[in-house]
Length: 119
Ligand SMILES: [Zn+2]
Image (cartoon, rainbow, N blue to C red; front, side):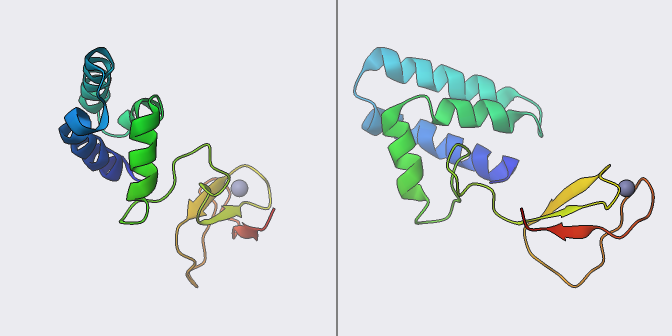
């Protein structure tokens, strides 16, 4: 899930909170936590957002149900590591590609062609 997807999800959940969470204190806490996470700069908000999204069972359920619609799984699930890992033969660099292409990936440190890592 990208930063933007998480942000969109968080905004959506914020709007759904009155339906999702009956307890007023919990709802306020979630709204505040989501707001704080959303205020973090792009690129760093993801971890905070994920944490909030997993901090309440109703929200977690909602996110999991939402998977059917558009979103991939949250970290913590064994299936969260989608994409293919490529590593430098000199083990100084690795990167993940969501989609496998025929493009040759090159290590930015030493220019070696990256190898697909199958675990
Ligand atoms: Zn390298």
